[in-house]
Length: 203
Image (cartoon, rainbow, N blue to C red; front, side, top):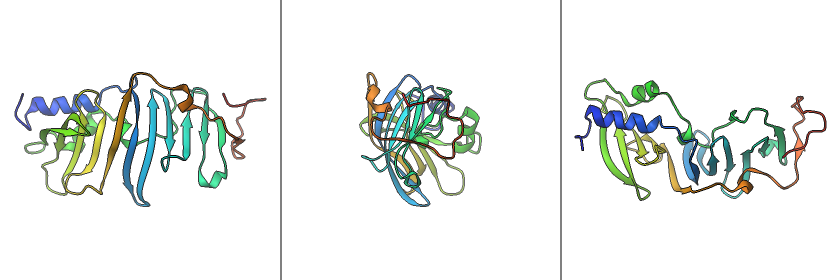
């Protein structure tokens, strides 16, 4: 194994952070700190399909095969919208699953600046992982990535647990359950959406 901070270790982290996750079936709970406060989301992801419960137990958003279901407080119920492009994602279920270009990660981690990021082998949620921590001046940023899958496990201040997005529970499933990505309860149309096909119903 290369020494922490070596070019080979940095390249390994960048390779993992840019790996395609579309074949994975992921389920878990993410905690994210935002201006509005601490946000906890239960998410299910299978390629372009995802489900968000926020807080866990209350459906907020589903990206299904052909339908998007949404339940925001302002909706006063569940709104259904057609999803014309299966590859279109209206909202990532968590920033930890949003893929970025290699150059973006290199800039964030300070690759090529001074000694570059410090890389350490760690265990996170029982999973073998690599932690990359910036060494440049300023608050240290840290990214922890799963060595087997490339899933980002933690992202944020290295010196402050509250200022980070982090998985608090993570499970990889062999296959997805179709029931995750549909809504079988009452629904209504979005009054501000004019592009419903004639006779459209969610499916």
